[in-house]
Image (cartoon, helix red, strand yellow):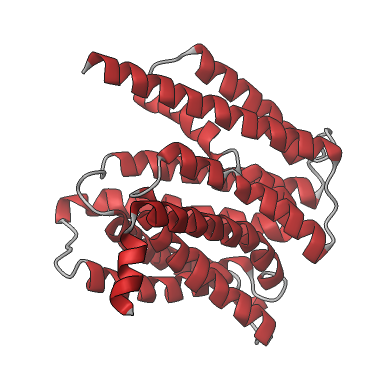
Length: 313
């Protein structure tokens, strides 16, 4: 019976179906994660919540790495860049995101998260001097317009609004993630995805520890509901989803996985409305749509670059 199941799974058509189902599950979990963060930070201070989440995730990732790659080792010369990746991808990202979600809404945060590809492209041009094309310019301009509508909510700047301040912090998280992506460019090919995630998660968690101490006055026992959301974020969103995402990346085209990731903000907005009763302004929906259009243009740019590369080989 077990042999038949393995044979069925390894069949190319069935493997493609399974990969698409897994990617759907990953997108749903990551979309719902904003709801869990919003509920958890209502009882647990945001930075402390991030620390607890990634202590759990670090332990589990180390176990996964030891099982999958028992010989994996971090080279001493790569420690500074790995530390920098951990600071950008874990410490700063979740410092900004958790506080931002607490001040704003889960729906707003999920819409703003769609900015990551646009910010990354902009930094790639500025830092690595990558080629500037019309599609890149169009994508960045449209993405900036979409982000303005998503961040301001009603199309007006109000720096005194906690909602607006929270949105800006989430933008800060997206900028941090873009820098994290650029730092990892220099480490690609040296380590597997699981190894890099494990090292950077452990290192980033260490830097969350001193930041969480500033919240000690807010430390208190929290409910079982908050604990369950914390465990969900650590086990499912930070460990299981990433391992599954690595599995899927080896079996689906990057363009396909990107389309699935574009579903994450949609899931976040819908769940924010249904579960938390959050209000979403029409301008934010337009902003989210413009951001998705910008991401589509970015993917067209990548495909065009890939086809040109293929023609020259």
